[in-house]
Image 1 (tube, rainbow, N blue to C red):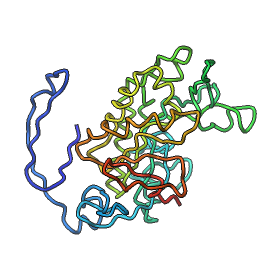
Image 2: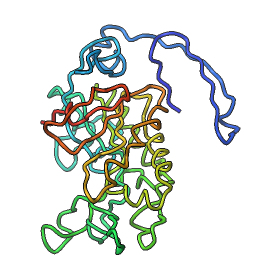
Image 3: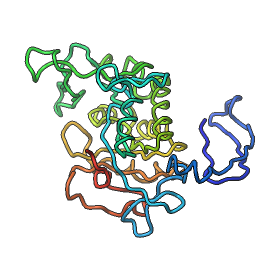
Length: 317
């Protein structure tokens, strides 16, 4: 359980659960929160509070009104083995041995304060099967459409998918429920806590270093089978709530609406950007990732329904 005080003073809490759980239901407590000093706020601007839109919805600011200009980078594979986690703080040169903290230090020195992340790549692994797999059904439903792991095929454009586990394993449990693909597409109703504990470490470290992560909750190529076999939309909504990261300073995107055949059409995702997202007590804005990357029309930043066009505020360098 994570709790963050948004103002100094005494805070009280009470826990509950459904169904009732002896370790969770009816527990109470309190704690006292103190404000950061001005010197501490200068060290890390995120200590001024969560991000919010300005009054005219044209820019971003921190909770105390301090302007926040986003300079961001795309690190979609942050939660995976592509960004190694080391418990120590030893500085390693950028290269094969470099870890997640080394890349954060590098970008921080350049003035960056934001990274784009995909929380999970459910069906990606270097398993000897093709990086692009479709079912033999009338719709040719996508099972996987991954990034190619170079060197695993007979030509530069053939081979298997990149492996996207981390030190805690895969993000979901196996076997899955998709007939014929039980070992390729996981049971997305059962998360692997160890995977997300390593994700937690990285989110916390980013905040400590003054970075806001924009977390896209799942790679889009998992959406079609997720819908067909796992009680859509409730299963997906529960997953969003599981990895919402409301207590840290984050933004969470429930959908990457690119309108391709490898994903559920954008018009079908509307539920995920309506009532489901209001369950987060900290009310972080929830962006969508639209198809257009240039000239996209912004419908408020964010508007009254907390929607924002993510690609219009990210500057990748």
